[in-house]
Length: 144
Image (cartoon, rainbow, N blue to C red):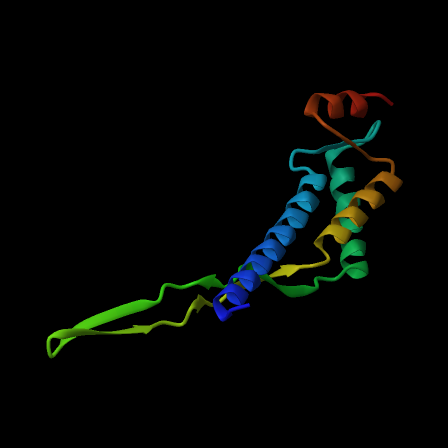
């Protein structure tokens, strides 16, 4: 296998690994849902706020932030530059370049999923239930 083929295979593997990481992250975020309401028969917003704050503090203690680097874009092939100049009736060319642009990364909290799940479990244990709409939450809250 030539050096160029080996580089392309390594690049393809890096892209696959990056895509897999993002797929897992998106799936985890999708499971938590963005628009979510909580309700408890007879519950008030003040009670919910206090319960949620207590649950969040406990979840933070159980699952403290654990920041780890995550690759956001893998190394990519960079163009080689070829420069040609006339030399005594012919052309002399030279190629230069690094071959790859370096990978980029950021840090993500690896405990955010477990921490969010701990808050949800704590709220559920305290009698609150997650519902899909504000109307549903109001109906449950009014029921005593």
